[in-house]
Image 1 (cartoon, helix red, strand yellow):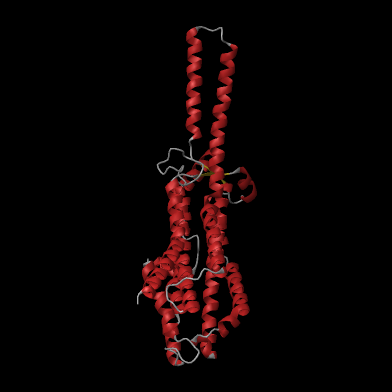
Image 2 (spheres, rainbow, N blue to C red; image 1 turned 30 degrees about the horizontal axis):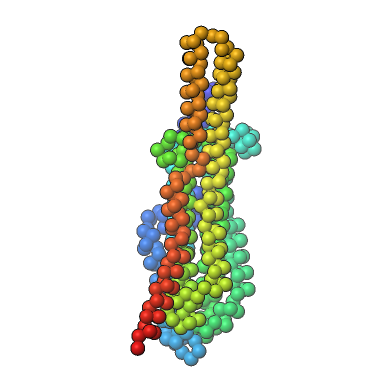
Length: 399
């Protein structure tokens, strides 16, 4: 087969290539293959864990508070964790797989990825396989994200966390710590859940790293007039916003835990205490938020900026050339000079137009949408605190 025919075949193959299940996981695949509604997964996850704890509470006689121990029905921490936190981890783990596949598939449909860079071809090509999109996704990205080592590291982290903090849960005056059997079962459950949470975190970091790698290993086709207003790269900002939605749910859980802490410390449900521990967690939340938004689009920004500067440089060189020609030939006829001035003027217009090309793969309203999503849990906490204190003051002032 001729070299030209090979290049044509490779080009056609890349144009029709689509990704599927970059995150390979038996549990995730089971849910995705059956297209189970995320709301159903959320509800089932919540019910299963609450049922396990309810059975333990009934078995050991702690459905209601007894002595110095808080019973199941008043253990708000369990309800918060198993109606918001735990289901969110499971559902978002599933959704992350869909979000990542959709992100790359839309980028491929938009024609963003062109041929591999010379550096990537030189580094990753073999005698039997020329580096391509398929090699990148199937043999590198998919294998990396789904390696068993991430699960191993995750449960090592979980084990360290459980071992170093178990005494805090053992000393808590809740029904779980009142019986050694219920405490052991609960610790096993938390070991599994913390492990899954850590795995979720590792996979997010890994996907962000590979998104950036894709823009380093392939030549990027930035299309300034593409309808999405972001050069065809808006799927990246959509992915960032989806990560923001995930983070905001954990922000809601943070608010609920803050309400629980306020109830424990003041005895008034709805009062939120603004002390160092809660403020510190909010600081972490708002430091993490912009990282989640900008990390997946960093390399894309570099590619868009490089493409824009390259075009500006081309117009600048042509402008300088034509201007020097005109300056050195002012003795030409009026029509000749007028024609050259017109060309220079049009080049300047094109230069100004290129200066307006986008260099970030998102529109301003998308960033505003992300910011509002992230800020809403904190606003909810402040509003809850203000309303609760107002009502408390109102009732206390009445005779």
